[in-house]
Length: 252
Ligand SMILES: NC(=O)c1ccc[n+]([C@@H]2O[C@H](COP(=O)([O-])OP(=O)(O)OC[C@H]3O[C@@H](n4cnc5c(N)ncnc54)[C@H](OP(=O)(O)O)[C@@H]3O)[C@@H](O)[C@H]2O)c1
Image (cartoon, rainbow, N blue to C red; front, top):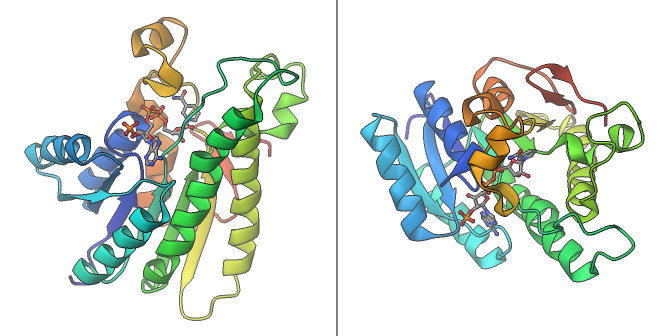
């Protein structure tokens, strides 16, 4: 494929914010690779995008399975040869508001397997493909719930939230974002920026919640939740090592 075509991989793109990001990035002319751990759900999402005349392909990727990640990277290498952007969106929260003193470490571990270790494994596997572009972007879907600053600030909207496995996994994502961004600043042949994004509270099925319930409690439409990640992906933006949402900077 001609390198002028932008090729963007989004993990967990079969539904929710990930699907909306795929749609909007596709509307900006990117060829979208719809990452989904489930083939049927992924194929259905791709069909919906093709119906909208968006260039899209399905990529099977379970971020907790290194074999699946490596196969995805191999396939992208063979078929496209490079990646312009990686949007690490796949995420879960299994905490069910259990207080920190009682939350089973097995639940915390599962949150970390997807949200942190899965994101790190995927990023490391896709880096050689991102390095094949002259300019590339890594966008990590974090959350204001992962902000240590906000968790400790009584006036913040997440001060009373208690999903510590999820929150700690997103705080870890934020640290990985900063450290990788700094490491990649030394690259000579290419520019790769790394940024973390907070979508805000969005009405999806996230955490097993009914989107209608979330909407009635202030959850935003997915179009708004996707906004900041899409801006970073499609604009000629040089932000690096930042944490932001549609309103501006989010405190780490
Ligand atoms: N919704 C919010 O209010 C909110 C707020 C802050 C941050 N976020 C973040 O935004 C991102 C997207 O959330 P969402 O609201 O769109 O949730 P969602 O509708 O539940 O979508 C989550 C996506 O992640 C995928 N996924 C889960 N485990 C995976 C795995 N092991 N490998 C690959 N994909 C996997 C899911 O696939 P399946 O369909 O196969 O389960 C689904 O496609 C997450 O990182 C979340 O933490 C959301």
